[in-house]
Image (cartoon, rainbow over all chains, first blue to last red; front, top):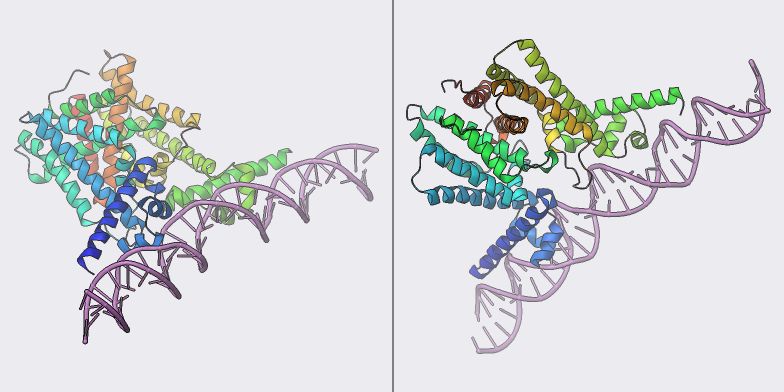
Length: 202
Length: 202
DNA sequence: TGTACATCAGTGAACGCGCGTTCACTGATGTAC
DNA sequence: TGTACATCAGTGAACGCGCGTTCACTGATGTAC
């Protein structure tokens, strides 16, 4: 394969992911349609399969991007805040998570909806990206509780992340009459601050 | 329609829901197949449509049962515990929720996976059942914080439920390396107790 | 640089399947006399 | 009770559609001389 060909291939790849991302953002993972993508990108139907093994792989590529954007959004929020008390940092991250989810509801959900066949395990970058996100959370936590062994910090990280995730998930759920964003923020802050031991007045 | 006919119809209805429930428990909502159900129940394919408008309605019926079982499981756990401090009650409910989810992973997930077309709203019993569950949680909360207006108790209820839901959801997720049940229990207890102001040592 | 040939990326018609839902039919059930 | 007729619950073959994926082909690109 010549350089030129490879470059074209690479370009097709990224254009396909672009298109797929747009589709997912509009209609969720289930809205990925090979024919639609080909039409939007302007390539043949079969061309998709010269770049990806199947549509699932393409969906995974979209999730990869989303995950990286999410991580970046949270990291940026923390960076913008600069030096801060651990509790404040946690709340900042929780709210950044909420805002990302609210701004990208379908793409964000896609990360968690992806059905993997039990056999083939989760791709490595999935776990890596998760680890990166968890590391951000673990930082203020271990400052807050320097006495805890890493194992416990990990469990704590996971528990708090899960709590915030749950609040965001159900908070944004239309079906259960969505909650206004600032109320969701208040819930997040409440749970996190309570944990940190600087409870806000409810 | 004669009494006899109606009775047969009613019987078919419940047998269909039974079969559907089994299918969902095994393979999730997406595993519902009209032909399979008909075969399992021993009726004609078309008979399904004399009882339900479409498969979605049948899936909803399954969710209805699940929701009621869930509510009953939580209520029973509380009843079994008898008189107890609000914090203990909350933890009991959270753990009951966890155990129900762990024992019925696919059926439980189905409750939240159901895609409703935006237009047709959620069936009434969905909201009622949710309200019943929330009432159970609100009880200890309002004892704990009698100063709060009902509006705030509602928000609190929702926040705590969502947190526990998130912890259970991600805790049971195979993809992110499932967490042992007792660790999940510990996470739930931690978040709830922290809120109540009787934090457990982490 | 020019020509002949080989390769292979890219094409898109066609395959194949799964499946929800319908509807013309039929035989069981009920009604009338 | 018995017979003729009407109704309608229940049947399942067939419709229709959507869609992922393949593969025999072709024309663009690269190579050799």
